Length: 425
Image (cartoon, rainbow, N blue to C red; front, side):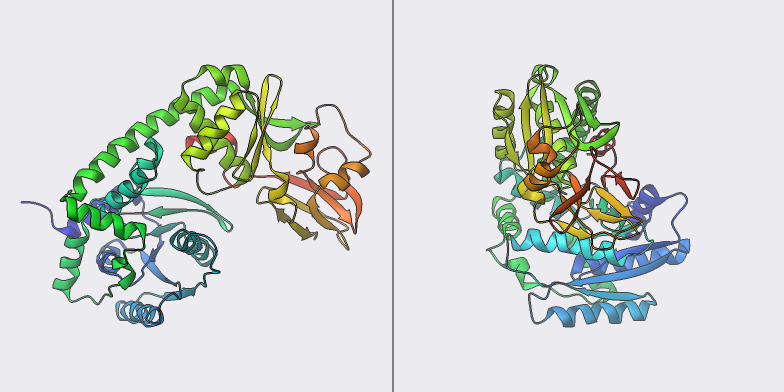
C-alpha cells in the first residue's frame, strides 16, 4: 500500500531533521494553499514528536487583501495553538519586484527568528520545475539549473540558519487536494496568475506544452548531483591555487589566485571558482549572471581584469587579486563604539576610545595621509577599500598597516573561510 501524504511528510522530516529533533522550529506561511498544507502537516507531526512551532507571515503590502490574508493565518495558528507573527515590508520601487521581495523575506525572517535555527518553507515539485524553466530561459549553467536544495544554509545578519523544504517531492495539486479534504482555509494570490511575472510565464508554458513537473524536477535533481561533483573538483583546485591574502600577518580580505594554475583548469571550474570568489569578497547572496561572469573571466585571463558584483579583479604579474571595488564601499560608514561595529559585512571593529571616531574605507584621502605602507601591502586600488578610522577628515588608524592598541579589528566574513564557503556551494 502506498504511503499517505502525512506519512511521506513525517519520513521527510525525519530524514531532514532527525533523529534528534530540535525543540523549536519556525514555519514561513503566506496563507496560500502550499504553505497552509505545510502548516497542517507540521502541526500533526509536531504533536507526535513534541516540537514547538512558531509561525511567521511576511506581508509585502503589495495588495489590499494581504493584511486580511495574514490575519487569516494568525487565526488558524491561534486555533491550532501556535504563536504567530506578521512582518511587514514595503517595496522601494527599485530593481526586480519578485527578487527584492524574496531577499526581504529572508532578511525579515532572519531578524525575527531569534535562536531558532530551522525555518520551513513550502516549495513544491512545481516550484522546482518552474524555476528550472525560468533559469533555462536566462541561459543558466549546471549550477543555476540544479534543483532547489531541501536544506539551504543562509548566512544572515543575525547569524546562520537553515531553510528546510520538506515538500519538494509533492505536487501543488495534491497538497491543495489535501487541505480541501481537511477544510483548511487558504487564499489564492491573484499575482500567481499575472502573466507579467516570469514564474507565471513558466507555469503557463509547462501547462501549454504538457510537460510534467516531475520530469523537469527529476532533471533538476540530476543536475544538482552533477553540481555537487563539480564543486568537489573546484574545492580541490582552490586548495592548490587560491589563497587568502595577508599583510603584516593580518588578513586583507582579498583572495589571490595563481594565474598560471588557474588558466590550466577546465572552463567550468574556472567559472565556479571566480563566481565563488566574487560572492565571498562581496558577501553577496547570489552568483553573478553567467554572461557577465564569462566576460570578466575572459578579461582576467587575457590580462585585463575588471569589476563585477561590487568586486574588482586586478591582474598583477602571476596573480589575480580579487578585492573589493571602492565604489561599493565608499559610502559605507559607522560610528565606532566599545562594542564591535560591523563594516561591509566582514570587518568587526571596536575601540576603547570611540568618541568622535568614524569607521569607513581608507579611500584616496586616507591613502595620502597614511604614514606606514609596509611591504606586502595590497596595491593602491585594493588598499583604499580597507577599513580605516577617522576623526573628521583626519586619519587615525587603518588596517592592517597602521593600527593602534586602542582599536581591535577582526576579519570574519559571514560565510567563514573561502574554502569553507566554496564547499557549501
